[in-house]
Amino acid sequence: MKAVFRFLIAGLATALLAAGCGGGDPNNSASDDLSDAAVPFADPLVDDLTVSPAVTRGSTQSPELPGESVGTAEPTEVPIERTGVDWEDLESLAFEVDGRLIQLEDGRAEIANGSSSPDLYVLQNRVAQGDLNGDGCEDVVAHITESSAGTGTFHLLVLVMDDGQGGKAKQPVFVGDRIVMEEMTVKDGTVSVSFLDRELDEPFTVISLRKMLEIDVSELEPVVTVVESTPLEDLPLPDVDAPDIPITFDPGAVGSTVSGSINFQQRQPYTAHITAGQAFTAALQAPIGVWLDVRLGDEVLTSGAKRFQSVSTSLPATGAWKVTVVSTHAGQVDYRLYVEALPLGVRSASAPTPKQAQATEPILVPAVPNRANSADSGNIGDGPVMYFTFDDGPHPLYTPQVLDVLARYGVRATFFVIGSLAEQYPAIVQRIHAEGHTLANHTWNHENLAGLPQETFDHTISRTQDLLGAMATPCLRPPYGFIDAFTRDWAANHGLEVVLWNVDPADWRKPPAAEIARHIVQNARDGAVVLLHDGGGHRRQTVLGLETALSELSNHGYRYEPLCTR
Image (cartoon, rainbow, N blue to C red):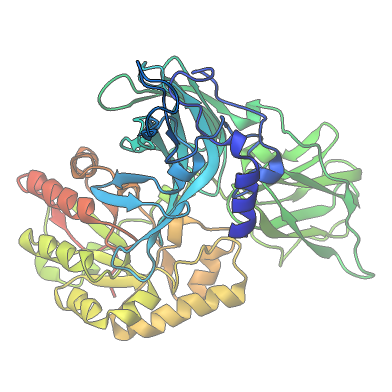
């Protein structure tokens, strides 16, 4: 594949990203010079690639010197000044993230972070060109994704200034996590970006907003402003419904199950002929972000905007009811839909319990644990209590640092561990337990539990629980906070309660330590459940932010107990 890509680039040298200083339209942000076949890392969401004429590296020329006749002296080779930033420059770009140097090779870089999976940086086939600093040169905005195990996929924009040496990268600008990029443009020194995102309190599977950012690069540090945020429900869907699929019932059966696959912003309608007064149930097994829409003409039982995954009621009218699966999930997912219609006069005794899987669910937490059941009753007393929790460990470097900080401030916490990492670092697990903290289940390999088949769910949960043995507490924190209509019931089968959080400093985005600390302190209150990460990537800022927050809270009378106890 790489050879084919190099051949395409060589064959289209006149379409590479190197207009050169003062060449071309400095505000140009899109070009049709490259066909879709020539675009590397093909992305169906990318319509075009901003390109400019090529530059040949190491070019030389033999100028005619003043006062000399051509051929009277041996020509002197003088290098032509290098201008423009081409695709090869971007593939070997160097930039810094959190003080670490990221050096791309062939558009990729793997950076070890001490866990079993490195951070992966990938140059995407989406760029914009224009003069960013008013020097008349064509600068470039590159789109790079950072994938960190146990966290997400972070979208970064790297501003590459034309310095005549292949480009100099500025500090990357964070756009979002698990978003859908649409368009980038450069005009009058400002970068405009449109993308699909979600509300702050919605899970990462959900796409509910179209946002537009403007990035002003005239200052030393880029200034990012959200200039537009529009709910997707206010925008027309790009695709019409797929053809209706009839739901049929086997002889003597009252219910039917269908399966399918659906992508972002798609709608798959099903029809079932049902009589008024029949007890009706529709239950969807799918990740959060995939919803039901049930209606007959103007009669609407639930709309996709209400974000229900099940509905159960007596139907008000007779006809071909349309049961539509609607996706605002960020990617393609599988689903199972169960539809039941009981005979008139019969009430359902075994139909699935109706549940509303709201997008706000991942930030909810169960009731504050009974303090009388705390593992160390010596700490029980009056006053506000906070619960610090740590996900995605153990990590050989950062978990011990977190434990050191907690010990200095007398804090006991709960660590939601990845089973495969706990197996790899048993000494750290033993230290967590020995120092009075508690351990809880975060799956074996950080699987997304939403939409997972029950057999796979049972395997990842039981394997982790068995590994922890007597140290395990009856708590499960689903990775990413993703759950579906079945997660809590299946967890209960293992004797586990799903526990989430209500304070998220978003340390997984790797913000500065001061920002992490500020969020914790500003949201400190009785019953606060703080989500932090001791694994899944570079966590130095988390360690520093934790220390700062605990120092600032030390005179506020808080006690710190484990969220989960045996």
